[in-house]
Each structure stands twice: as C-alpha cells, then as structure tokens.
Length: 142
Image (cartoon, rainbow, N blue to C red; front, side, top):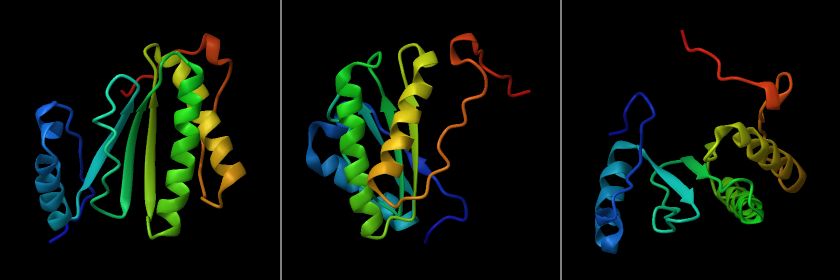
C-alpha cells in the first residue's frame, strides 16, 4: 500500500550493509509501502552506494571530494546509470550534490546537468547559479 507522500529512507550505519539480507529485508518493506531508498555516493564509503531501487523514484546523495577528478568520473557513471534506469521505467530522480565545503557543490551540479543534457534525453531543470558563486552566501529559509 503506497503512501500519499513520497518517502525516501537513507541508512548509513555499517550494520545495514554487513549482510546482504539486511538491505534486502529493508528493501522489501520499502517496496511494500512504495517508499524509496536514498543511495549515498561518497568516496570513502562504497557500501552505502548500493544502487538498490525500491520504487520508480531515485534519490541520490552525492558527496564529492573537493572536486577531485574522481568526483567527475563518479558523476559520469551516474549519468549512464540514470540513463539506463529512465529507459527502464524510472519516473523521477533527485540528485543532491554535497562537498566538504558546500561552496563547491554547485560546480558538481552544473557538471551533472550538462552531462545529462549531453548524453541523454532526460529532462532536467539543472541548477540556476545566481551571481558570482565565489561571493555567494547561503540563503535563509525564514
């Protein structure tokens, strides 16, 4: 019985990944309720990058490494994976970019958006950079 509101669950503790059955049991419950997993892609923890979909919504939390060349290699791989998933029924994807210093996160978002447009037919809003990113500051929510 799917919920009315989309829900995504992120697990990070090592115990979820110690045995394959742990993640599979969680995935079965999430599938039953139409909830999504959050796939975390961080260079230092490859176990949390499980790429296990439980609904037709993908949620990826991508943690960069200071714009290291491997950040871009990992994003290139995500472009291919997202292309494959959309060709096979994925309806939507949310891709969140983070950096140790989040001032650099928009650079990854722009790179991702450009690669998606270049390599796929996936529709993306992409980021809208306003002003000089080097002089930017976080906006207030309130």
